[in-house]
Length: 369
Length: 83
Image 1: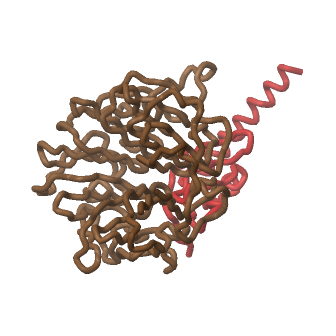
Image 2 (image 1 turned 180 degrees about the horizontal axis):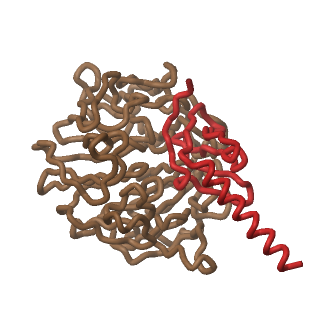
Image 3 (image 1 turned 45 degrees about the vertical axis):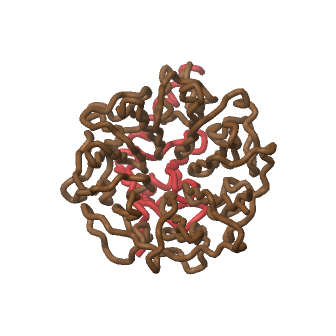
């Protein structure tokens, strides 16, 4: 099993041992996993978390807000020994904050709590720091998503609870709750099965109703609503997009959203100034586009960064599009990649890409023999 | 003409008092930054040290000047009391 990475590396978030502007070519990451395998990777703005198959955590990158759950910044993925007694089943990164779900159904949060995004009190200031060491919350989170400054969880009943910055409506708690430092229940949504937080918005999917629920900032049409009519939405708005399929993944970049359906189709909407929607054609706010891989290839997996997307095809080829200033796509074709383009990965025929991850402007792929 | 990555209200910036700097996250992983002094001079473009992106700060320069003077007054009053 080998781990490869590329993209922005200003804080050493790629784990290659240095911090520099960017790593342009997919590069192998040396990581000592104590005979374990990689189960999951989560990418924040400038930091990265890795979870092994025994539920142990590793971290590297920016640590200004203790988002690594350790004392010092590291540029290689290292075990987070302060949490070595904990077994995680899921890890999630926000911009400069992080969390993990434990095997005994607790939520452990750490990093920046400047906006209450960890669901931990922020006042009185003399008792609560804006920078939090890991703290265990009695919250049974089946799903978690973290955005720039807010967090949304879905519990076993399918309810959505949010905390953090709500200036743009991203908490969905109405116009009177523009910030929160505890998780509060979002009213007016169906039983939610998928959730994704962006820069200043939240999108959720209800499998039972086959409906999308959206709230927050819609400046770039990220809520799939006309941006002139709806600038910001403070409570969930239900949208029927006439999808008869099951949803495999609902993902969000900063201002773009991607819905991957069971039949393999990729629906995308929101901002497209850097090719985030995989097309050079205009996609008017309130409408979505279908992203298609070349020559009828089928989607095996997809991952979304702040303004770029990587997509694994079933024929073991990797495709990417979107913002490319830091070689976010690893493709040497300028600052914007406006359609799905092949990522130059030098792998043998007997090697298979088994996992892909993106977040911020960085990427990780796991390759197995 | 410069194209902005976005227009961000000053209320969305994080102000670091020790440095007199305003910060907002950049999608590259670094942060857009602009000093209070620059804002008081009417400069409204916050730049990112790691990439080419620029955001325009939405703010009221007169209001910021008034707040700044108010703060100076409060600080010097405190100094006076201490003296």
